[in-house]
Length: 479
Ligand code: FAD
Ligand code: SF4
Ligand code: SF4
Image (cartoon, rainbow, N blue to C red):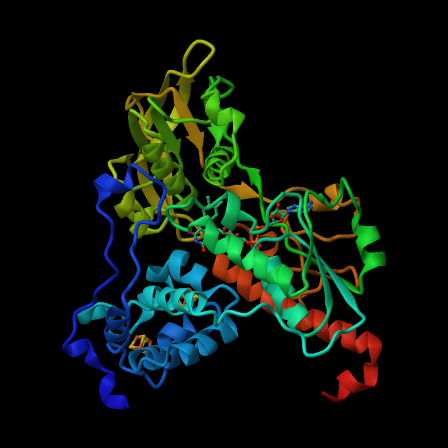
């Protein structure tokens, strides 16, 4: 029913209702309410069903967006779910946390002039409805295969591969050093962007589908890569990037200067009902304090907004470039501003002041210069521009680098790039070690959930080919 579509000329863009900033500050609940079926259907009907859908081209999963929008507009939600879940292991998660303004929605042809189709919110609506109505099923292999795979890392990259391989019938074992499944989706990303129940219900279903999780198991400490290679027919490394970038400045060792991920993990654990000593002792707690978060990425935005919810006296984000040049999503900056966060653009720390514990950040103003070879404008301090920001808690959110995996895994033959990420053959997703594949942030560097899913999905296909080839070389050659 094409006449149901193309409604953008008549209907305005509408997002699901956003909770008022005043009430958001008091809890960790997600900030958007759900679409009701009528709103989802009418918003989906705004799509013009492009012959060349740029939304799909710019979705890392190449989701068949026009088809599931049309099905939603027609009220055929179960079919919409089938189409959307065919390419995405976690559509409800991507619908919540993809930076749509840079991906699908930012490339929607009606964006200029009419406001893009609200693709992410419709994707979330479809899958949340599928959960409510029992359409989301555990991976169900048609037949069991003898071959087994070992997946290191239960983040989105590892899980996407696990789901695909289990559906094909492989015996899938996932190893993770954490006590819960989800990687950064469980301990990094805060509840107000992604409520943890959304991740936990997937974990439960994967277990029901026969995926075996070996938690509290750190590869390199509790088991070696060599042991996993001997145990399984192929191995996937999807360990993410966790080494916090540091900076050198006078006073950096003062008490009260903490890494972003320690801070966010403590808050997420508390949200999951754990008693977290570092929160209770105040070590990783913003309550009543002046907080300065250093950095301008999405992790910094998550920290400032967590500090607001913990009841900080004031929250300031200090970033050395300006608003237009920050790496984080504009949408998150906007939410943070609404919630009362102050931004000090073009400011960088010079020193940390205090006796024993930090009491203030001394910063200087920065000047944005000419672009370098990468096209990014360079920054330099402006002499004599120092100013002090009171801060009893300073959160460092300067980005992440990979750990030294060849050393941690006692596998010097594992090749890495100059940035420490794993080197793979991008056609086969395999490292130089036969049967050892890699996916997600450990290959790309810190990236996005949707890219980790894409990599996990592609790695699963390549691992399948590899194992089939081993079992029956002629059959695969003929494919
Ligand atoms: P991870 O999610 O990091 O998972 C890796 C897993 O491997 C972890 O569970 C870890 O415990 C495990 N592991 C590591 N080493 C070992 C070992 N030796 N043995 C066993 N297990 C090991 N992306 C978005 O798309 N939207 C967002 O809004 C967003 N917000 C973010 C906010 C924060 C604070 C952070 C830090 C990241 C955010 N990201 C966001 C990025 C996104 O979370 C990552 O790109 C994505 O999770 C990467 O997936 P992954 O599977 O490669 O790794
Ligand atoms: Fe958009 Fe992300 Fe969904 Fe792709 S997965 S359609 S980029 S929200
Ligand atoms: Fe629909 Fe926009 Fe995609 Fe075109 S680009 S198919 S209008 S969502």
